[in-house]
Length: 176
Image (cartoon, rainbow, N blue to C red; front, side):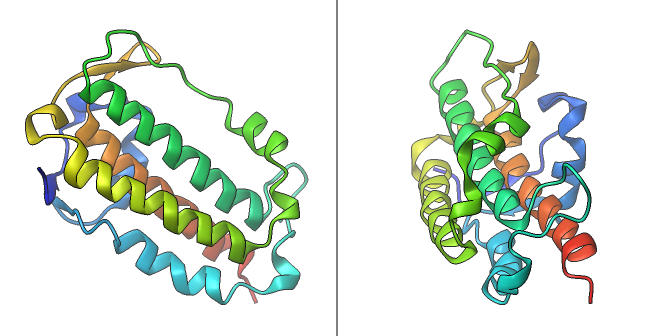
């Protein structure tokens, strides 16, 4: 099974995911899969409690919502990678991220509890990509919302998605 995954070609994913993949530095995804969490851990550990429910504008998510969204998205992307690796022929559906956040009630869960959950979800992601999907199956093409995508691209998307949101946190939520 894979310990590193090469950067996917643009033919392996829909253009809407390009920004996430471009967030990840380098040409190989280190399958210790800890790099994004190593960057986000200090932020979440030191996040001011009085800012956990802050939204910088009307209708924007709070930091708790953002962390919950990262968790939900990672779970969904795990499923998509697994389904494609196992040969699923159906087009996998998208999801309404705003509706997921609205119905999750992340406001009642402190960041410390959400980050503990992310740690467990990330372990599942690590195990899936390290041991659950073969190198050959990483290149299997499936369909997401009618567009071609590979598990290899999904691995990169998962980590780029987290880095994208960490960047937003730094820019819009941790302003002194």
